Length: 352
Image (tube, rainbow, N blue to C red; front, side, top):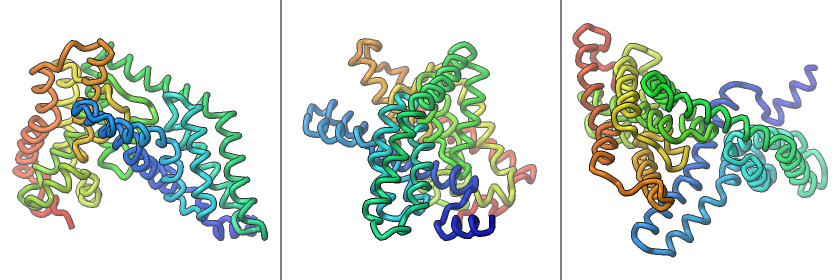
């Protein structure tokens, strides 16, 4: 057994929650951003501006989302070059066969194929043949066997969440907003979770509300400590920057969590805010303005499909309030209360 452990250490195969649940999952979200998300944004600009060339560029970017996710996962797992490059085929097959739940299929199968490839990497004199063969064969075989079932299961969970949100918009608005918002701030990927579950519609709007509550909320609440640099890095970057401070004093998270519990049901019950753009946008918040852009692309798609007549003034008011104004005002006010009662001390929100 000790020899097996030593061999796995040599191959850098580490069975840990951080390696698979944090590093790989977070990398998958980056791969999605660099393909599906950015491609959708370019495609939307092309459609609105009447520039077919941009639609072509965006279309190609969207098509490679499977390979992009798999290669990103392989990079996070520190795969040797031959394994890493071979994951392109694995990602394509898993995403294609996984259907609406393709991202989760890619996540699971890419990890298995990557670790299988690492096991044989540089173990033979014909590594150039053996390593790609093992990685691709394992990955595509698993895709054929498992991807449809994984994709269907993930999509079913997402459908249940979306159905429940439609039936109980107040309760589910709170739950989805709080949970996804917390996932965004934790060192895991809310974007990958939303993509894996294909979380769109009213539930996607609640997820967006939770993410914005954390990002904009922390950015505004910590302005006195971090000034403009902190406002931009958290508001347009990620609230994950506060994770170290949260570990030191978990109470600093209370204003953002309560804010998400307030804005979530406002989004679902009052404004009926839906995320009908890419599911990954539901978990991005205001990061690069991807969340609001995703809502807008959903509006555009719905109009093109005849589902929606036009983008109304109330649509814009709802989006601006949920994504920017309410998180800023509510979290700032709650932050003041927490400072006055001593839950948040001087320097507790300071970024290094």
